[in-house]
Length: 61
Image (cartoon, rainbow, N blue to C red):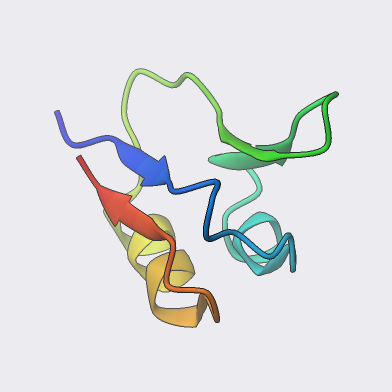
């Protein structure tokens, strides 16, 4: 299964990934974007987040 990954060192915390795919991405209690643990991830939603991320820090693993 493909899993989305956020490169935190490049992330600017714009929140676009959360707006586009709120079931996949969330803000952690530490203030960083994290990927929710799900049995599977919507390729459409994650691809949209990847496409719209201004920091280009989301990818598939």
